[in-house]
Amino acid sequence: MAGEFKLLAEKLLEQLGGPSNIASYTHCMTRLRVTPIDESIVNKTAIKKIDGVMGLVEEETLQIIIGPGKVTKVSEEFGKLIEAAGGIDLKGKAADKKAEINKKNATPFKLFLRKIASIFIPLIPALVASGLINGITKAVIQAGWLDGESQLAMILTVIGGGLFSYLGILVGINAAKEFGGSPALGGLAGILIINPASAGIELFGTALLPGRGGLIGVLLAAIFIALVEKRVRKYVPASLDIIITPTVSLLITGIITYLVFMPIGGFVSDAITNGLTSILDMGGAFAGFVLGATFLPLVVTGLHQGLTPIHLELINTLGDDPLLPILAMGGAGQVGAAFAIYFKTKKTRLKRAIGGGLPSGLLGIGEPLIFGVTLPLGRPFLTACLGAGVGAAFQASFEVATVAIGVSGLPLAFIVNPGEVLLYLAGLVIAYIAGFVLTYLFGYNDSMASEFE
Figure 1 (spheres, one colour):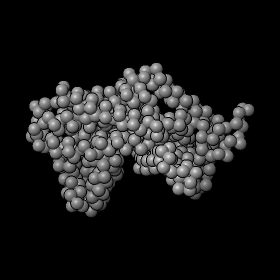
Figure 2: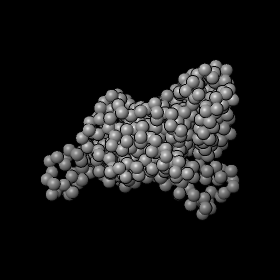
Figure 3: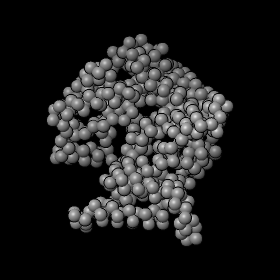
Figure 4: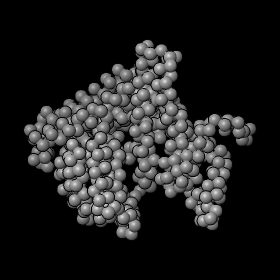
């Protein structure tokens, strides 16, 4: 098995122009993200045809879709090959090329979402693990299978809920790092927001509320402290930097946080949560359809992770998240479309690609099916989006919500409000069926699949 991962890494590295053409690389749940020094020598067509590659997205980085679990192993082998060749030179031409790529793909909105996504992507494993433990524990207690006052229930609750109590610290660390500051100072920015001791502070006759502003306030404070740190460092002698720079940065940020960022963060948080709930209340099924049907194009760009703070803020403010079950139908529509193509096509290679992506799709990882099947074929991607919209309309109609965030698909049922699990599963099946029917009748014929010959 290890040989399979190494072979795939070797093939990728060869088509990427070799170790000397790699400026940087990393990976997320499904993608190997590579920044080449000279993109003109990258054979993108050959990469897409490598057995084991499910697709290629050209954004700020080249994002090679490999699939969950497998991408981690391939990335590890990829790194070993580069290390054996002498490592990565991040200077000179690599920096210039990265700047060129950034400029080519830059729009203010896309850059903003990418920054936010980069802050939250490293936290996804912790969010998924905590969310599942938290959700399953609540469901078991609700079903009466476990006494909520028992020691076991308390232990599970502490294990699953700990992250959400201190998430602001981790977000602050990643935000500061992303904006060029010290991670430890970013963590302090998060502590400024969530510190229970701030309840003893009164400003303008009003006591501060610990946590007011939520993750929005944390992001503002952490980004600010990173910017202040870089500015202060310019004027401080190197011999005094370790003392003066962090002290001044923390002092300035602390004052501004309590005077400005907590009130502003609270206002923005309220605007987001009230706005979304109003849209869903007024729009109902129609609003759900639009949100569900338009989510997959965001997944294609990789910018969907930028919505993570919104999900978390909904949970922080409302106690649950009515948006996640709606957007989760995007993957379900893909699953239905993939089943339709599988039963309709006579092309063996296409059937094999679908068979490889369906298990991940059912478990909430839709990218293998998107980039390996529906998006290359074209029309099935659109019918999958429409099928997702039908399932999302159902979720919105019944106001299904989750108690945490995690992967979509079948596993999301574990973090849905205990009394709404069957409704969520019903909506999931509806999205499967709608995606299947629309694709089978209108979305696919074998003439579309010439590249799967």
